[in-house]
Image (cartoon, rainbow, N blue to C red):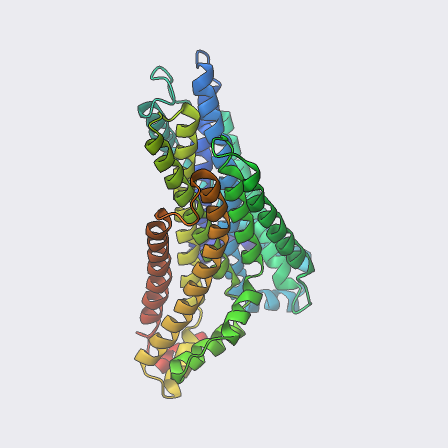
Length: 436
């Protein structure tokens, strides 16, 4: 089965491009930040510089691991779903579910190895640039030189391989289980995340305004709440669709399509919720903290500078990964519907009506994801602001929210409409015949 996996990659390299891109970016980010561990472990590095470098590597490395898994899982889930007919044919030819799992996992491991190998060079350059940022801000001594050693190399390769193999195993497991009912564990994890997030956000009121760890509780609360909403994405989307008063052919068809494909579109909605919640909560709370320190006339400590750098870095990583996940998922999901678009046009729909339907679907997804993400973000922002400044809703929220919504809408609507327009260039009869 491994040789079959190799031949599958060789004959259809374009299908694995999304997985390769996710693995490459993930490995590059993990290696870049874990090289700070190698740098901190060098002889002659002072304790303050070593602590700054180790903290950056530990915090961002943890986030990076989760993001790699989600990004690769998103790409592989779409990949496996589009190969349902191929997998069914292999099963009819005598392949067992275990053999299919080994084939798909083998493909993912090969692609992950290639992505990790390609990421070594950019990670070295990224590590040097990151260390220069710490030097310029005074958080690391000028005498510290960058080191790219075994910690960065092995962690990048190991985490990327494990994330790819695990995501591939789960994706093909769902595909080979057919239509069996499942979701009990997912529901349990979702409600657990919601309860833990609410508890973390509420615990903010137990801190004082000057506590160094004040931002931690509401930030984790917002993240956990967004994870809970993300895990409940299919059910939440169906609830939104039941209350939409859309009319007209495009609106009716968009709601019907979304209702039928709610489970398949859950990954896109999950990405939007996580992106909106984490970016809005982190950037807003950091802005409130920075303004509070500035108004007090105090100078930021090294720990405060470290926290600010980490917050902006984490948000930047999340923006990059979520954009990659959304573009991959939306492109694959939209291009996979070429036969459906052809059938609609043969039934009398104009290209403009088809694009209108796709735009309405994407708009509903975007608005749903942004609103749920904003609810999770506000659950962290409001307690933090009340404790830190005695206010309720800071003015920084509005500018951050506008920027987050603009990025989300640009990525989702741009990718979906551009892909649909490309699919519509194929004549309707040809699209139906080729897809058949």
